[in-house]
Image 1 (cartoon, rainbow, N blue to C red):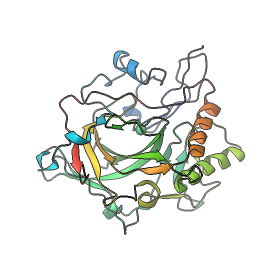
Image 2 (cartoon, helix red, strand yellow):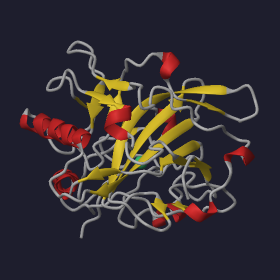
Image 3 (cartoon, rainbow, N blue to C red):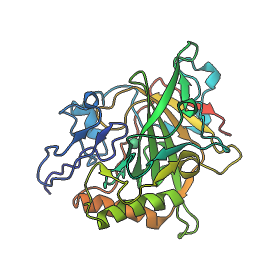
Length: 325
Ligand SMILES: [Zn+2]
């Protein structure tokens, strides 16, 4: 089979808009950079080997010892009181009674772009969230170094999650990538999805996201297009992070795991504070099929999954922020 150039479709945090497929070539084509210093020409990769090959391919920092994703062992979680490099993430605006909204702010002010790709990445050009409500982390924990994080993009890894819990994969994982306004520090929120018990019970936000993608294609865009302005078909498209993305079930819905890791795509920079929620949302098999269809419509020869294989934890700890174990 001809080599694929399915490059960077998952893009955790790579902050690059993924490329269009060019079966028969391994040249990246159409790569658009949002942040050019984060991606270099050597950052060519795909998921044929689930990223096993990235460590030996000279892909920037992918051979480091603080890589992501990792397997989270619930019986081996560390006490956050012992953590010095970072505080718990302050989920301001994301609590049960809060509202944290990102989105288009009217037809003349487009705010959300989408990749009509396997990861259905949404990129936020602007947002209407007041600064006082943005998530914060103190890095390092003990210093006067409170960092405020702004959401950059949201994307999905499907059929196999990236993080696992006690060795278990989930069918879907969402990553909300956020950046400190004053440094290169990144923070990513990971949300895991399980299959619904009722096959027809869809996740409401994923329904809206997938309908948006399909309507854009019906209006002239093509699968594989990147950075498509959504305001033409959804001038009011918004994401309420609390209701649309975060878990809502369990006695402590926002309990999460935290650890220090990397981008899960090249250049694999080790500058991510990870926060993976312990409770799940639910996705239906029909919704998962849309991710598969999007992948094959954009890249007919692609592998369906877009997850990097689990990386060694090495000397790191995974901290417990309110998880009952
Ligand atoms: Zn990701």
